[in-house]
Structure formats: structure tokens, C-alpha cells
Image 1: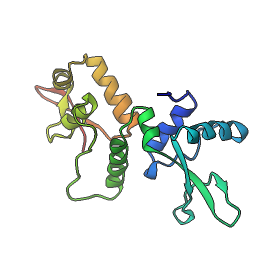
Image 2: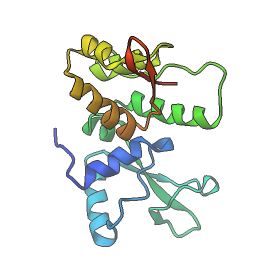
Image 3: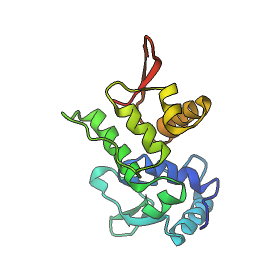
Length: 178
């Protein structure tokens, strides 16, 4: 399978964090013929799809169709899988973000591929008592610095999860996913 380039990966990563997997706006500095070429290749590979834009929701336009309508770009399931993101996880992250804005009485757990180490970490952080680094190390078999990197990189930055920390006597620093 073809892997995304350094230009294509950020487009797909950002789309995974946006409602509806919108691929627009493109990264700063990517415009004109270069943007058209990059997006064209992504459409050919099935990673991005051009759909009718909903102007009432304020979706950004990729191009105008000439009749007062326009199209926008969305990342497909194949595009998300190309960068290693399970489409279910991406939709769950968007739902979790909406839940922070619109509080719900009982937030649903974040679904994803079961059995992955990332899913194990998310499940540990969703427990009411949270999880310490040593508990996550025991569950995943990773080293402590790898766990901290996964929390800050994959979960906080890439998936945009709101992970909180608190110091608990006897356990040390505990990470929680509200």
C-alpha cells in the first residue's frame, strides 16, 4: 500500500480531527498548482473525496461549481487508515470534542479497534480512578518514556483528547480522560 507523503500526511491528520473529516483548510503555504496536484493524487488514491459543500454550516470551499454551489474535501476511511488512524477512533474523537462543548449526562467510551495498545491506554485513562504511568507500563509492556510520548503525542496532539493529570498519594501522577 502506498504511504502518504510529508505533504499529504498533515492534511489527513488534520482531517481526522475535524467534524465530518473535513480536509480543508489546507496547511499554510500549500496553495495554487501545488495544492491542486497534491489533492489530485490523494483523490486518485481514494484518500480524499470531493463532496458538495454545505454553505449553511460554513464548510470551506475547495472549488466553485458555477451555479452558486461549491465542493469541499473530506478524508475517506481509506485515507485515515493510510496514516494509521482507525475511522471509528477518528469519529469518536470528534464526538468527544462535541461532548465537551455540549455536556451529556453519560459520555460514551471512545470506540476503536479493540486489542491495540492505544485502545488499552484509552480504556485505562477512562476508568474513574485513571491510570499512572507504572500501571500503563504494566498493561502495555512499554517503557515509561514511550507511554509518556504516546499520551502527549498520539492521544493529546494527534487525537486531540483532553487528558487531565492529578497527583495521588501512593500512586504518583495519575492521568485521566474525563
